[in-house]
Length: 260
Image (cartoon, rainbow, N blue to C red; front, side, top):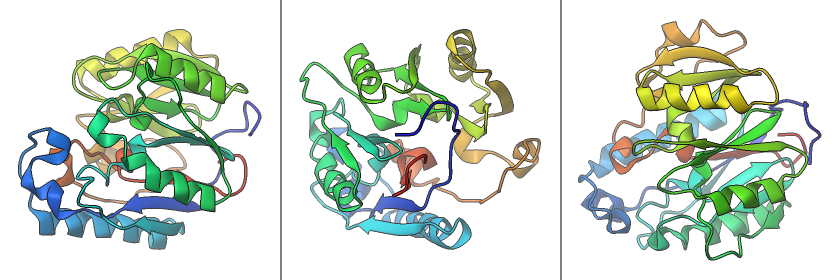
C-alpha cells in the first residue's frame, strides 16, 4: 500500500456494471423503489462509461448486468480500494451481498490483494468510505456500523481512520467528496454540513471545505471552477438517482499500480 501523505494518486482503470431490466420494475433488492425509465437509465450509464474511457483515459472494465442483482450497477458499495488492496464489503442489505462476487473476481483478475469481511456483525457500504489521500473517513449510517469501520481500519493500517455520523438517508459520499488534494466538496444540506464539520474536528491533516452545492451529483460548472486543478466532465445519472445511485456509487476507479 501507499504511505501516508502520498495523496490521491493517479488511477488507470474503472469498473462498472450494466443496468438490468429488473431495476426498472421498482422492486430493486425488495426496496420498493420508484419505477425507472430503463432506456434512459441505460443511456445515462453508457454515457458515464464513455466519459470514463474517452474523457478521463481510463481502461474501462464492464461487468454484464445480472437480473438477479437489480442494484448491481451501484457497485461502488461493494469494495473499498486503496493502492493494491481491495476490501470486499458486506452490504447492510442481505439481498445485495451477492453483488460482491463478480466484483471480487474482477479485482482478483487485476492482481489486487483481496481482503474479506468475515465478521457477520459487520456491515459496510463502500460509498460510506471517503479517502482523502491521507486518511479515511467512514460514515456511520443506516448501512455501515462501527464494526465495519473497524475492519476498514484493520485493513488499511498505514492510514488514520475516523468515523463520522451520517444523518438522513444518504451515504457519506452522497454528502461530500474530494474536489482535489485537501479539499472537500460538500453538499449544502444540513446533513452534509454536519458531516464536514465533524470531519474537520477529527482530521489528521487540514481539509478545506470546497464549494457548496445542493447535491453532489448536480454540481454546476460555475461552482466547481472555484477549485484548482479540476477537470469538469459533465455526466448525468438522473434516472439512476431514483434507485439511490450517485456517480460515486456507479463505478470503482482504481489503479493496477500502487498509490491510487
